[in-house]
Image 1 (tube, rainbow, N blue to C red):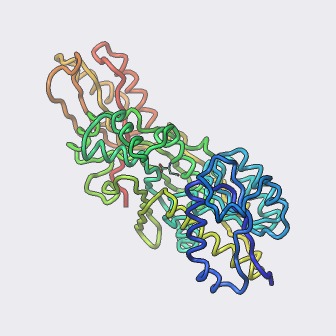
Image 2 (cartoon, rainbow, N blue to C red; image 1 turned 90 degrees about the vertical axis):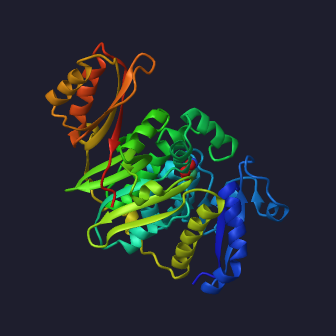
Image 3 (cartoon, helix red, strand yellow; image 1 turned 60 degrees about the vertical axis):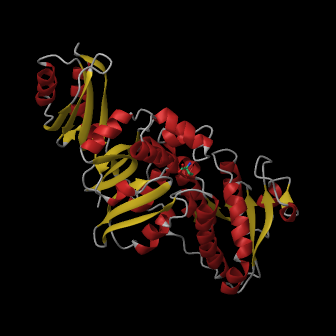
Length: 433
Ligand code: HSE
């Protein structure tokens, strides 16, 4: 049995400094659970992290190889983020027989298969609970609690920044640009919020989550991705009037072994619990075959919540190393499915359409006729007021329609000389769980 477990910590930013603090605060309890002490032995930073406290300076190493090639280090906790140099550090650590804990969703979404394969080859463990949903133990719920069940769908809010902005627009009003600016001033959005608001951050998390939920390999290229920057207060208000709330959702569905994986602003019923998950909170609403509907909500980001998820992985992996348990999580197994992922054209959904049209006799009839000719059935229609910048908004919701038919007919409508701007198309999900 090992005499001690040593950790090499990569990075000392928000999450790593919280981890260091929690680890020391909980040290006594942690060590009482294991027959061998667990220590943070060395820390590597790239110099752009938080100021390192005096009592931590003694752990700092200048050269990453002082950690990656230290034979006494068993576990690397990677909290640097991004693809490079994190990927190189992780591969080298794995090749040197070290287990990995990471919060790096971009790296796992882009290179997860390669990293998992290498972990299997070298017989080391990997934990990545912190990569999806911050402090919410969603991966552990799927891989342990639901291991024997079958997940049919997941509706998730997995980007706190976007959820904060959309909640403000819904509850207090305001244009996207103004709300984003306020969020940045208050520190709720990054100076460069692109990955959050364009849906990429949610897509990375959804690829990692989908692999576990459906035991199938997924690629970032499989994901239909739309962000929130074009959400207009008009759409927020029309949605409310129709009984819906707009949320940036990450959606996973498995229908007869055909997968849907998409991130986009979505109208969901204002009466459902998911619509009430506001601000920086994240949420996962699952539909399972046997356990039925389940939901988890909590902080999806931040130092302490994310570090709590890292601690969970640390407890599991340290326990396995101490007990010489070489059993691998089935989540990184190569014997996973290769399920077919639906393309955009194969999606069936209800839609919200906002046309900007001239307020003249016969305009609505022309739009309705194009929709009807393309198998799009209208569910409801709103037209109010006269002339907003030379045109009026006409809002139509549809019954379930095929996405290819929908976009074909919207294109035809946009070519009409009575339609003055590109039509807004948003998807509607009526049944969350
Ligand atoms: N930037 C992410 C968010 C948190 O806004 O939710 C880190 O994954």
